Length: 330
Image 1 (cartoon, one colour):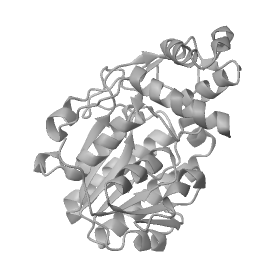
Image 2 (cartoon, one colour; image 1 turned 45 degrees about the vertical axis):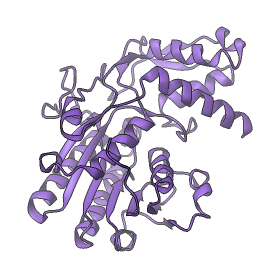
Image 3 (tube, one colour; image 1 turned 90 degrees about the vertical axis):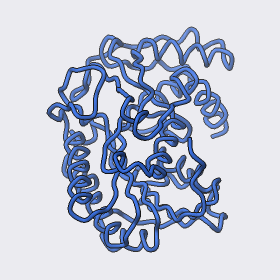
């Protein structure tokens, strides 16, 4: 990878969330000026508390659905890392209106504000849900199907808006289609918690996880440090062919839920041998879910020089160590 980005002003929307707070931490450590914009609807103040005393960190508590707030956040910024969104397929099925307001109108506000402020590059969180009903594996960027949820529609619209803004106004955009990201700071709590932190937390508490379906659905689980690498590469690239593109952001291997359970138990056993006796409960499949997901990362390797360091097992070991320390001290 090229040298780290330093001495830049970077706006991170959703900076108090899981991915956003990890990006804040990384870019602060590399001597950048960080502006975190978050309304704490899904992010947490405790994720950014450690940064508040850093003179290079500014927290704006505000909503991307307000254009003036977006304009304030991007003043004199070099880059924007747009992570703010209402995630979760089930959440969007339960409340498509709010998902659209945040993920489409909020996205457009940030894109417009960034264009008006002459931000050099706008890198945004896209989603693997954009592949929809396409059954082809691995998932290749140019081959998508019809969206299967309101959430998937909103993330595809983001890509369309970014493309139009790049071609019409000249702002540089890069979209990162995240595949099942996991790692430190990801909350295990709430109705829409992701599967890995939820399962880890349940096992630590000797409670049985509920698996949707027979456990043979598979995902390309992607550790947070691989995602940080992709965001930095997207900001750094000087390759004109790499700009105004969308990239899969993944490890490039798939793991079934049954395999995931096996790994989690294996890595938790050194901390608590009783976890061996905790079994799983199998329930019905979840609406809007696709059976299998696997990313091709060839495009990111070729155009951005992406080289993911963490497999699911390596990422799980680090994550479980973090959760064990943090869940036990809460």
